[in-house]
Image 1 (cartoon, helix red, strand yellow):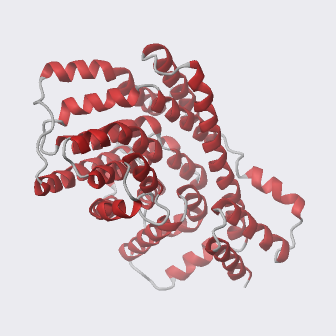
Image 2 (cartoon, one colour; image 1 turned 135 degrees about the vertical axis):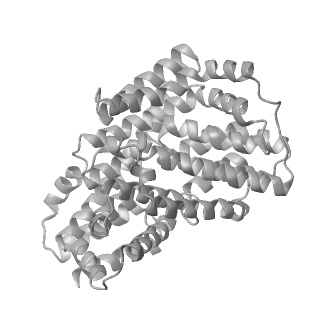
Image 3 (cartoon, one colour; image 1 turned 90 degrees about the horizontal axis):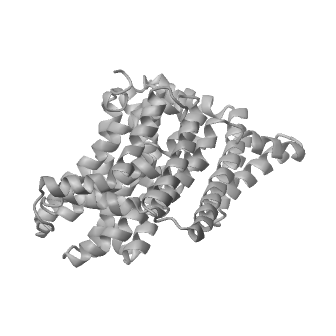
Amino acid sequence: MGTLLLFIILLVLFFISVPIAIALGLASTLFLVLVADIPLISLPQRLFASLDSFPLMAAPFFILAGKLMEHGGISERLVDFAKSLVGQMKGGLAHVAIISCMFFAALSGSAAATTAAIGAILIPSMVKAGYDRNFATAIHSAAGTTGIIIPPSVPLVLYGVSAGVSVSGLFIAGILPGILIGVSLMVLAFIITTIKGYGSDLEKANVKNIWNSFKRAFLALIMPVIILGGIYGGIFTPTEASVVAVVYGFIVGAFVYKQIKVKQLREILVSSVVTTSVILFIISTAGLFGMVLTRENVPQSVASFISSFDLSPIIILLIINLLLLVVGTFMETIASIIILTPILLPIAVSAGLDPIHFGIIMIVNLSIGLITPPVGVSLFIGAQVGGTKYEALVKAIIPFLLMLIVNVLIITFIPSISLGLLNK
């Protein structure tokens, strides 16, 4: 009865548009005070306990590193390099957009930053080249989702903390799924551009142009190698790697590319602090909510309920995927990870899933929520950057949405895509 009251309060708060972090905190507080009779003085301790994690420190540093990359002239160089590689293909700029988003995802760890940084450069160029504005914006919104799949990724860090699994392992496991998604989006873009009649946009590739653009982008491209190589080689932890990323991004942006000026630092730092504060606030209240669920044995009850039906592992995985897709449409990614991980992870493990594999499945599912109304953050950012109407963008994103769902199923039922590099 108490758990039912908790969810009723939460749904009512969602219905009246209370911000998700406040809704989680308020619902948990009311439950603990009215039902569990826990003194209010203990709640701040619970909130801070959710943030007391060394691996979690990586999140604000990766956010700051992403902001430095966004303002440091790196995105332009990545776009130029992508143009030299795939610009001559059918619908060349569409492929450039996807490849550029994948490159930037490996630097920023953020879907929003990836969509904004690459979209601001390429969408005007695509429209000028004859592409439909909605199609161009949809590509950037969809490809931007790789920002939380290809490492480094803030959501992967948060899942690792929530599930108690290796963040390093999650980073390695995210590489091939991110590449799979990028390649599948390129296949879809090729089909659409062929139907629409978009031709090659740029001059044919030649070794000289590729080499010159590679040299200009080299310092940007080498960063993921340094970060992931250092983590995988045992040189530093993911948390220490996040600090290395900040230092590297600042040095390259300020002293090598000379794009970051002193007057920009305040804007970069303030933006990073605001983003970090929002995320940590959600984590703290979601952690409180998760504590309530654990106290009421909700994870065990849900697992027992599903087990009572004697379902096959395949059916269980399909149900989990469907649930994650639905949740992603209306709940913020960070809150979804913190709340659902303790509930769904035991069920997934009982179905034979490796916890790291399940982490990738969860993040890929929730990344689809970034381009799904009504809480599609990347859709809102894409519409703003692309100068198009949100409603029109929703229609244009549907083919990419379907392709991403296909990718979820492939990643779910072929574990080697996520775990293959870890087993080498």
